[in-house]
Length: 175
Length: 407
Ligand code: FES
Ligand SMILES: [Fe+2]
Image 1 (cartoon, rainbow over the protein chains, first blue to last red):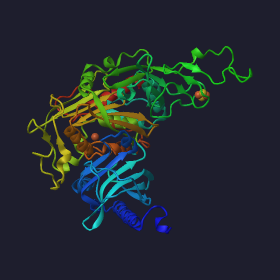
Image 2: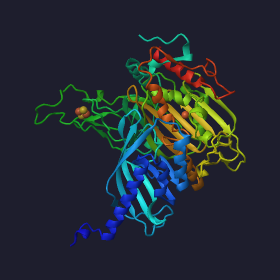
Image 3: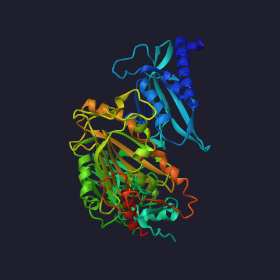
Image 4: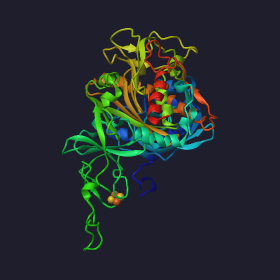
């Protein structure tokens, strides 16, 4: 048995995971480098971006911490961060795990998303305040569905699942 | 020790946010004293044996539905043996409470039922024969409810909840919970400030359009038709409500008829601004506080209960229950979901409330005896019908706080 299939992964699987991991890493990098204007570009036009807690997901709660549908809402978030909201300046630093496959999930409209695949990535996000105060801010999983569009592998749906129900101070910059 | 400034309620000494002696006295005189404290919503303990743990100040409590008496009981969450916490879970269902440390067992009415190795082993050891198990139950608190809210108190003499908060506060609670609700969200926001800074913030209707600039930036301000700040007799609880001008009865939209934004900025997707008139009274914004640390919110179609639990001098946990009505249509739920982007820890309209307390907290350590000026809207704590640019409810909070603290 070749190395490529020992874990049940085909070469195509591994290539996909590598590409998905690259999108996740680049997307996190845009946030960490304060290039927030580029952040929506890692999502498809009809994307869903949601932040919720593990507890909320287990309870089937509709309301999480953020819920954006479509790139326009992501851009609105960025515009609000830049011009609309007042907060103590800070930056993030993401550390991501390798992505792994999750069982296929129904899409938001209830139908199976064809040719899209669901990938889970663990993250730690450290928050650095302007005072220098550096703390572990968020720990959780990206639950992502990818889609090939515009010649790239884009995030069609991302649910940021926070392990804790506690959120320190506020959430303005997306995770 | 500490003396309140001569200006009375018009000044709040910064020391109150940063003095360990005051914090200690608050535990005794407020949280374990003459106050009713929210412990959970009744839906969390709806079934027999269902429990929820929480905190009254720094005291851990268990709220449980006693299946025999079919009523809610509240106990201090502490084993009488050597003081271990009895329930570690946030939620659960129990037939009894068994302490993990030495297996002492309590029934759900708080009685001590059994003691492991009470008679020792083979006649050796065990508890003395005169130890009376019936004299050592869990510390039980008085319980009272209004609609979906469950309150407990350490006091034997406090009047019932409805009487203590007064008729206008009860009117508003009956309005919030006028039909069956269900939970649709919840989280805990950890605030890096003394709890009283947040308690003041919610009572401060003066800051709303000044600190929170989202609407102004994007030209989404709507004219307010009518509103008031109403303070209850004791001072510490209040209502702040307003009616936004609406263009038609079908549905309102912050966006239509808005002012132009100063920088010509516009948001792209206005779906999060879509609302419908939730209540027939036309009130679109209702903020209610219940002394000392409970907050209720109707901001357009977002509904929530918040409880603030102090965690030492410069930290507090703000627990949120986000709710909807059981008979919501899918369209209404969807509007609530979209509008949820406007409130809460990530809320575009009000996320600033999360950090503003810390901006004050940071200056209080070297306070040099200074205090905050609280004179907007005069010196009184009376109801303000003219304008919500008033700090009357903040003064009211301090009036009740000082009365209970003897300061
Ligand atoms: S501390 Fe609870 S049984 Fe000993
Ligand atoms: Fe506010």
